[in-house]
Amino acid sequence: MTAREKLTHSLLAKVPKDTINQFLSIDKAPMSVLLMSVMVGVLSGFVGTYFEHAVRLVSESRTQWLSNHLVNILPLGLAAFIISALLAVVGYYLVHRFCPEAAGSGIPEIEGAMDGMRPVRWWRVLPVKFFGGMGALGSGMVLGREGPTVQMGGAIGRMVSDIFRVKNEDTRHSLLAAGAAGGLSAAFNAPLAGIMFVVEEMRPQFRYSLISIKAVIISSVTSNIIFRIINGQAAVIKMPQYHAPELVSLGLFLLLGVLFGIFGVVFNNLVTRAQDFFAKLHRNDRKRYLLVGGFIGGCFGLTLLYVPDLTGGGIALIPNITNGGYAAGFLLLLFLGRIFTTLCCFGSGAPGGIFAPMLALGTLFGYAFGLIAHSLFPGLDIEPGMFAIAGMGALFAATVRAPVTGILLVIEMTNNYYLILPLIITCLGAVIFAQMLGGQPIYSQLLHRTLKKEKLQQQDLPAQDPAANQASATQAAQ
Image (cartoon, rainbow, N blue to C red; front, side, top):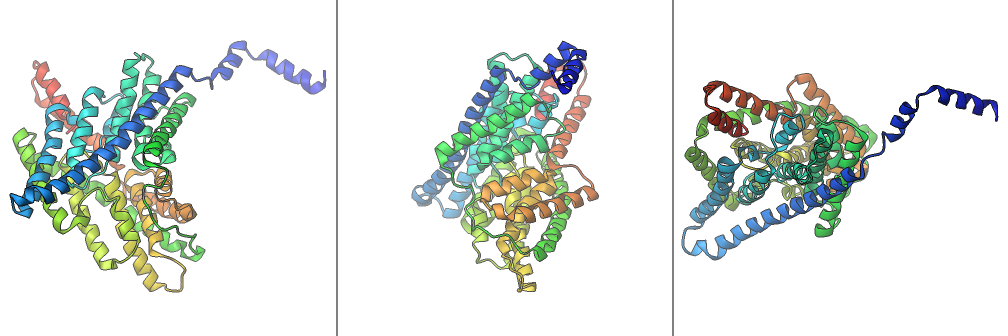
């Protein structure tokens, strides 16, 4: 035995066997947890993918009914208003009657559940979010499907935990996080972004361990495989493939990031103000709630006829913008218009997300910025579309405060890997300036608002009325 081997043997002899066994068992995740993560990923992939198909089916059916049937009975504008209003009312009614926590994005609810502050009533969330989202998104409202898929994915994670009667809190937490990752992966065909969203954006709630990380990765990858089996492997957004810009132009990307950092703080503040406005408007009364929701949906039915660029989640709009044909002034007007429509739809409490509308806003302002930069610096080898892609990631980073997730999400969605350096610079600039100006990340802000509202409502109720307290806790998610 050599001197080195003797030294190693003597050192190991001094270490307790329990410590060695504990170290060797750290990476041994129970096989049952990994198998349940696969199950969560498969179910999240199916639900997330077919949710997209269902929303598209409702949108296409609305157009067919409008053009083939209702237009023969009613004037075109009135028919468009009625059919979109009815679709929106379906979403609002299901939320208000059966599952108030399904209102809005749903991502804050999952974050609250990971912190043990919000319940996960998956038997209500799954049908209400799926069918309610079909109505709200199918009506043409400016809402995204990524928030619903994340919430439904998290609900699936909790459902699997309950079906298999999992008692270990860490395992239940891991499956909840795994479902959220699988939901985002299926929403945007972005497995890396799904993983990083949980690890980075949900970092205050996520319990880091090798088992939880494995569960999140397995679920995200499995969900994405299901998505690709059904939809194919093409990127979600079909855009031109850009080369890396000149290094001297990176300052322009930093400037764009600064502008988005400022706007991100303003936008987050506007979202909560919009929610407060609609809460005062309908006062949680079902009739008023449905009337307001139906009127908003009907207005977007009319808007679909005359200004379709102001409607919908915005993912379909992004390729149209980057293919050119728009002046910078028109893009900025459209940017302002979609800010207003996004606040109206999301602030009203409809079951839909804000993820996709933010990406569309980032594309609009980014492309307008690129057009202006190209006209001011014609000698630089830059294209406006580069700034559109950077803008998508920058606005997400500024509002959500998750720059790495924003970078990965945009790269995976557009397949523009050569723009990773300008994306990093733009997103980093956006996050730094947003943090300097204060405020909370959008989903943390929304969760804090929900918890505060619930607490106030419980304080207003008499302590001897437990039934009323339970009803108040349920309605607080709105």
